[in-house]
Amino acid sequence: MSKEVKKPYRVLLGNRIYLKLEMPTYTLEVAEEVKKRMVVEAAQKLNKGVVYDVGTTVVVSPDSPKVGDKVMVSMQGVTRGEILNISPDLTVVMISPLDIIHIW
Image (cartoon, rainbow, N blue to C red; front, side):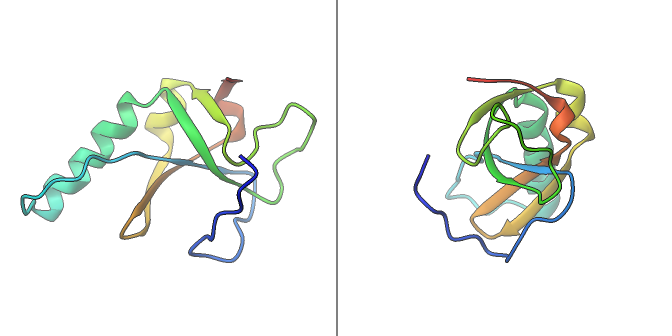
């Protein structure tokens, strides 16, 4: 994925990776607590994710994940990961690079 994406922040610091979570959209009004549970459920089912951003101190090698790569993440990594609502249209799960099993 060579297309540059405009991020709602300047730079992702540290040894972490953001994976984009695809959340279903609904026309019904849903309580905030229900939305949070839906995000957690989506994260727990995630084993394929798209890399949204890579932190500044992630060790870079020719085989390192890059923005736009589709990766497989361990279930433990996903459930340990922190879910962040970066903007109204963007929810990510923050994981350790060590939780990535392979790149498709």
